[in-house]
Length: 495
Image (cartoon, rainbow, N blue to C red; front, side, top):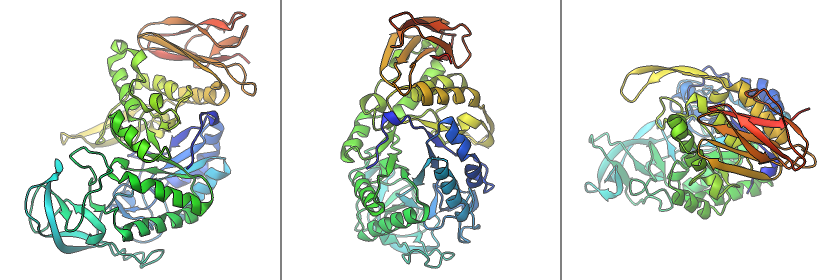
C-alpha cells in the first residue's frame, strides 16, 4: 500500500472547510488554482466527499446518502452536490493531475442517512453510553432503513439498502427512547475503538461490516469510483468506528484492481497513543493516521503562551512514535470554531505550528485551506446562540514556509530543544538541495540559539522577515540564529 516517504517533501492541501460556500463552485476553484498550488509546493489535494448527502446541495458530505451519485442525479433536492456536478468534479481531478498534484478522495464507509422508506424489524435497545449494555428486551421497531435511490434508478448498482444491511440505528418511530438499537441477529464489530464500550455505531444507519452483501457492494463501489475518478488515494472518515479488519483487504483489492499503490489516511480521533498504535498494528502500517495529539499540543501551546514548555510539543505524538505513518496537521474542518470537535489553535501560534509540521523530517504535513485563505461564517454554538467567526488568512507566512520546505528542508536534522520557551533545529541539506536551513521558535521572548547547519561560511537570512540581520556561519557551520518573541524565524541560504 502507498507510503509517502519523507524524501518527497510532499504537502497535502485540505481544499475545503466545513463552511465552504454551498454555491457549487469548489470543483471549479480546484480547476482554476491547481497549477498555482503546485507551484507553491502542494503535491496532493484532500477533496471533500464528492457524493450526494442527505441535505443535497447543502450537505458537507458526511451525511452520506448515495455513494454512486457524484452530482449527476436529481436526489435530495438537487442534482449537484455542495461543491458542483459530477463533470466538474472529474475535471477538477484532471486539472490537479495536469498540475502534478495527486488527489485523495474523502470516503465515509460506516453510515448512511436519509433513507427513502421506513421498515419494521426487531432490535435490542442498548445504552448509548455503553453499547454492550442492553436496556430492554428485543422488540419490534420502525426506522428509516430502506434506500431506493429513486433518482439514480439502478444506474451503476442495482442494490437497495435494507435493514438487514445494517447492525444499528438510533431511532424507533414506535417509541421515543434514548437508545442505540442493535438489530436482531447482528453484533457490533470488535476491532473498533472501545469508547462507550464499543464505538462501532456513530450515527444514522450503521453498516454491518460482517455482511457479505455490504462487503461486496463496497468493493464494487471502490472499483467503480477508481474507474470513474482516477483518484490517487483515500481519506477514511471515522476510522475508529469501522472494523479495522475491513480497511486493508479493501485497499489491497483496490490497488490490485488499478495496478498501482494508493495512499490512505484514516481519521482516528483519539488522544490515546495505545489505541492509535493498535490500529496501525492491525492495519500492518498500510494506512496512515492523522496526528491528533500533535494538534491538541498546538491548541494547548497556543492558549498557554509562555507558560507552555515547547520541549514537550512532540510528547505522545504519532510523528514521534510512527514518523512515516503520521499525517501532521494544525487545524481541519472538525476542529474549526463552532464545530463538534472544536479545538482552536490561536492565530498567533498557527505559523509556529506549521513550522513544526512543514519544516521537519517526520510526518506528511496537511495544510488547512481556512488557515491559508481565512474564513468568515456564522453558525450556532453549543449554547444555542449564533456566533460570527473570522478566521484570519496566514497566506503570506505559509507561502514562505512552503517555499522553505520545497527548497531547503532536506537532509540531516539536528534538534536544539534545551529551553522551554526557545527551541530550534537545523537541516543540513543535500547535494541536489544545498545550503540547509535553521529554524528558531519562541513562545515568549526574543532570543538566539547557537546551532550547526553543516554548511560552513554560509550566509543565511530569515525568510519570514521577522529578523532583519543576516547570519554567517563559521568554518564549522555554526551560527547564532534568533527569533523575536512569540514567533518563528526560518533561516535559509542567501541567494
